[in-house]
Length: 433
Image 1: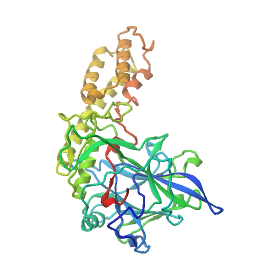
Image 2: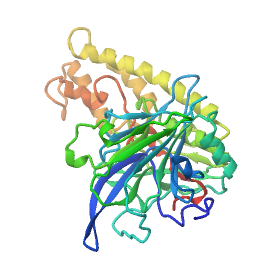
Image 3: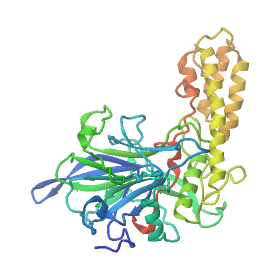
């Protein structure tokens, strides 16, 4: 049995927001094998499962646990939610899914996901995939602390245990990049520190003998355990050939609630540091714009944006709460304006645009893109019955869609997956490379 405190140099892999993805055939002595992939998207941390025998297997089984604090704001429901759904796209919106609950008093909510796989093949080497770039804390976390987080229901957290993979990689492909930028240090984060790209979307690789193995989910919640297999998991409605993957995602429920400082990522990091009792500080780049989302690489606001760390969880929580209130106001303003635009000429004026434009500019700051500015310029010109070069001839819904996103005032400050996906995934005690 490998030393359970040494972790991943003995096994090369791990997990992040889970999406079991495409299956790639392998050749092995005449037997057709498959590279079954699990994609993990979200602000997760990884730790070696200290008691794999809780899942009914032998103590020497190697398993890894995906862990994240259950963030709450001023008594509100959890900011994040975790779910399991079929498909290889971990960014798909509102798929039919099975919810993964956080722990609470009297409910441990430690989840186990299993499937039939070939014995781990640690000799597999792949030169065509991006390697993982997890953050490795400068100090270790004690086994007592790990057990407290996993097995004490007084700790509000999500936890999912998976078999140890053959190897891991960072996702890059048609659904986006699995990297995000931040600066992390054990002390204050300064402008002299170089930024790093960290993994925010991990792919776990397993060898299987069938293309789509059956899956089993069990909840270790005291005496009540629930088994689920593949047939019981809702499908997303995507083509059958794209269902050879399972996604487990941790995401911000209300994705338009973020600010230029990326407060949601900041609170995710602060909560994680507090949970593990780690001293790291982090800063995140300014959010680029309000429609397409993403980061503004290399642009850090040291004046208006705060560092995130385990001692300022309450501050970061207040910032997220304030952003929610501010964005609620913007949403109502844009929805009102949208209703007027639907009946252009009956009370809609350039002044109506100006108020919303000022509020949006203040909210998004330097992140207002040229596309958004042009869309607003065209809409104002058409309301004023003025021709503007480069603008459409009529005031149509497409004009405002460019600025208002889905037309309901939702700014949608999105990255790959969700707004809070910029937090680096963290390897506790080196369980993953």
